Amino acid sequence: MRPRRKRWRRLAFALGDCAFLLAIGWLAVAAVQVTQSLPGSALLLSFLGMGLAMLIQMGLSFLLAPLLGSIETMTPSMVVAMFSPMVLEGIEMAGFEFIPSLARYFGALCGALMFGWMAAYAAACQRRFQRTCATHE
Image 1: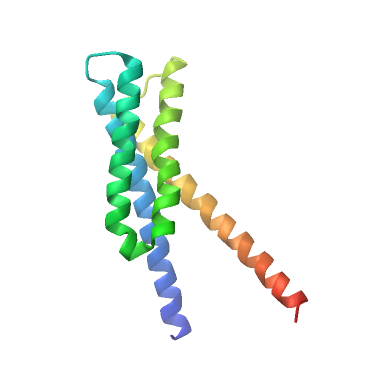
Image 2 (image 1 turned 180 degrees about the vertical axis):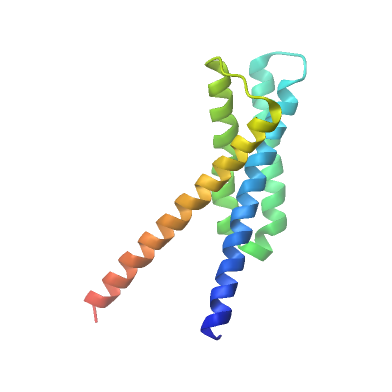
């Protein structure tokens, strides 16, 4: 494959991964917000919301795994789908109430932060691998 095509392909996959994690964060927080608006025990509704967020994440991951890769979609999206609603609920328990649209943007921000961390980690691993290969030649 030519280098120019390779760069475009890498960029397309990166944009797809980033958009996927943004969507997972957005939808996970939205799922928890929907369940929190129901009447009932806050603890039970929290478990229900997290379960719904994970079901949404698994469904989307299975749908997009053939396109983006199973490890690239499943593992980071699980972290985003669990982390963003839990942090949001912790902040709300501390007394800060988010308006619904701002909370969903917070979920998307968690997805963007996960993508940035993964990109930085991948670059660091690639540098280490290249140094290791260079010393063993």
